[in-house]
Length: 104
Image (cartoon, rainbow, N blue to C red; front, side):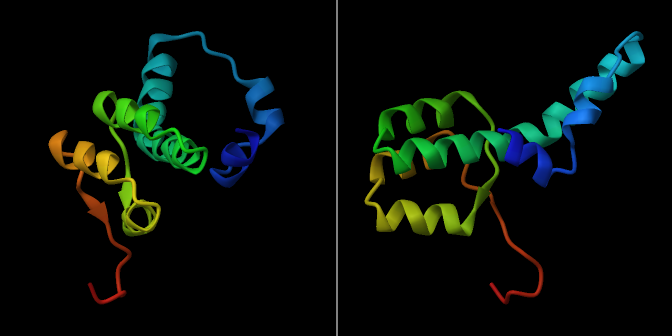
């Protein structure tokens, strides 16, 4: 988890120094979580699939927003996680974020 936070530009000292005292600060924190949460959930799903826990990956896909990338779909196909791919489609999570300039 700490590696993820570092990649997002958040350090341990920043976490320790956070003070939440107003409703405005709570709203700002909530918005930040909502923006980053789908990416985090997709990384958790990747770990589930790496561990062979496709059912857990399906459950998370059904109940949480995810940030799906082309590499996630390719890995699922190569790993033969077809049930998870069905959940992605059934719960309308099949919006892939393409990087600009890659010619898709």
